[in-house]
Length: 366
Image (cartoon, rainbow, N blue to C red; front, side, top):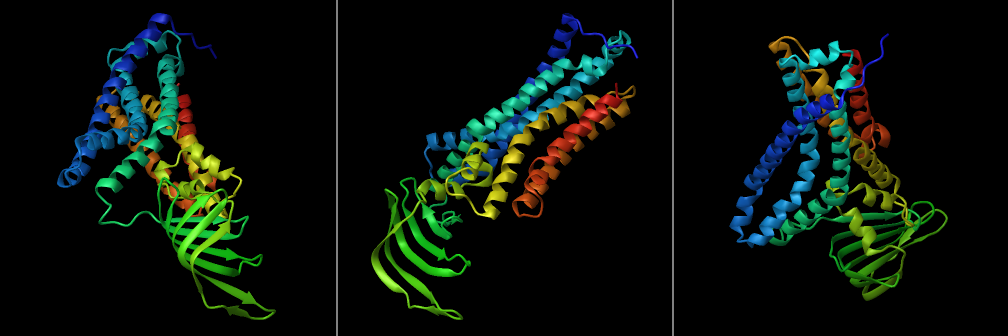
């Protein structure tokens, strides 16, 4: 077997340029289309409420990092397909392969771009994507949903202290509203149930106001529920903090890998259900950037053909595979969050499978 020749600098620059131009154009076009879609979806709601212009602008700008995370892999696929078609149309790809260069070698600039794109997806998603979604959600709550919808309820389980928390709302200052706290014993039975209108945290003490507490006394073979005792103020020493509860209240899309990992390694360990949920998110966030490599691999491999009809079929197939990648990833993500699949299988395996399939297809096209 003859060894593949290395590409010359001129060939490298030519292939790099042939990929870069359509990639930048696709990126700009799809980013604009996603922005237009956001505007058509949400602008009428803002206009009907007379929301200040600067708040509207900040809202739409906050959504763009999350949009880019999805736009970049699509742009890589389109650019790879367009580049392959153009090189094949002018017989440049045939000339390079006739000169002893393998297909993998010819497309080195594409693989470099795909790796850069994957790193950009990681950086944008972690640095701005989750924070942007949180900011956009806060703007919606402030201007659109403060009267017609309820705040997101928050549930938090401290398995070490055997205590569950529920509150209908928590603000940035750490003040809770409509709280329910249930304390369990070692056998998983309720020891006491506390309800309160408001609560605040300070120096490891949570102060509940305007509520009641009901204790459950237990003998050997029976449980006795004592009538609830009302209180104006009740203090509870606890290791939970407002930050622990606020992390639980984030949207799934707004949880970055850093946030999920901090919750998994926090001093207060989450419940098994929450732990499984967070691990699934971590695996998904770590492997989803491989979508750029999936787009590059299938975009190049499936559009190599001699006839125009085969090229169009290959291009349509590449788009279909990327759509399938997104679809399988989202379905498995939901299954993993609900405990029907292990975290790695649900969050990481789909991306690794499609990437491996793309590599095998490229190797067979050599």
